[in-house]
Length: 469
Image (cartoon, rainbow, N blue to C red; front, side, top):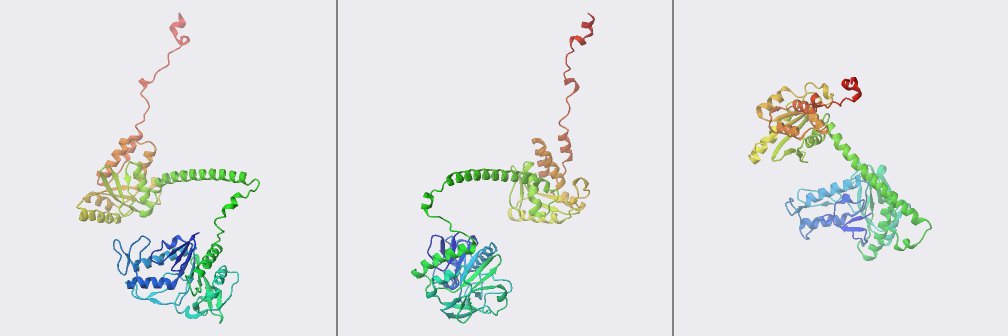
């Protein structure tokens, strides 16, 4: 477990101290600490250019549009907001040192930026002045003695100064809040909320945040708090524990390690077997899948069996055979495939002509009547699509034909026949079929001629001349 602390200085090898701009991806952490006043100040400094800030990748942060070598404030803050949401979706815990809501001014393209812009709230709530009210005080009472954060609050009780409190009459508060601490007047100043799949805990901050005597105690307390909240035990035992002998433990640990090796080996073999089975099963998916994300990988796998190489680009997929390329689109329908893929392919080929002055080979793979058994399919493409392919000059192949060719490869189709199939896909305009090639290929293996069959020599007992003599 590592802890990310934003604008709140802590001191421990398990804690990564950063600000809102130079932090790694927030969603990579499950334990996060945020001082919202420090975040606001960092943003304001970047806006006014009173201090130069860099991203984690050492890009300068500017109050404008991001360009090569420069990160924009707005783009970075929007990304941080998404990262906090993803962290909470994964079950992270965020401890917020609370301050009253306020606006951050001057951010280009992000007018009226609220101080809590990055933090999701429970449904029906928001972290604004209707929920959080400005106010200050230094004394408090614990409302939930068993809450893990109580030890953290006690670590700086003498130096606590709350800057805001929650309005417990605000809409949604009663149904979402778990009050940890209250001011002497009963106002909630330490509150936990369930947000997405994680939790957000608001706490009053130390008055002298960053002071050495506070940092040491606070850091140790925070580590203990996060371990309790996230269900982590102490992660490392002292070195001397390995010197304490327990009879029989060494043998048990050796056996455990051997069993773990066996499990790891079996898991690796299972993964390899699953991958091989999935790769082969994908060939069958060409008969029923629809859409680029479903049908296209199945088409690519069949094409690879025929000797093409394919590209991982789902928007501009290619089949490559040596120096030749085919730009293809896929289409599927429960009835006959209509003219829709024609327009998609034409737009793509016309774009290549416009951008590169290049006339490219086009192909449509049509999975018509995709929910009908292959042998019962009668009308897989509309006649207009076949006419368009012939007149414009590109190929159309049905998913059923492509599957039959791939199946023949798995059954031992010759390299010569595979080459002929690739040539047809590269050159034939209109509907492309392979039935003649596949039937010829299956007829290649015939019984040997009768004259080639050697008859066994007759024995002496069966020879009439010998018997008569």
